[in-house]
Length: 39
Image (cartoon, rainbow, N blue to C red; front, side, top):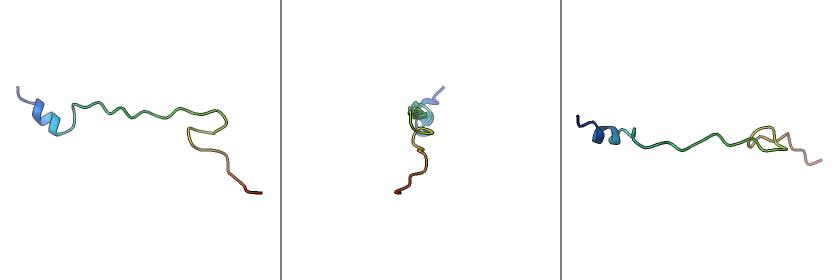
């Protein structure tokens, strides 16, 4: 029946496009690098 507006209000009709960021070479994970030391 008429679920569509209630589903839309609950935010169930939009696709959440957030994804896991890829691992980069030279880093341990996507953003985590090895510990940085000034000296």
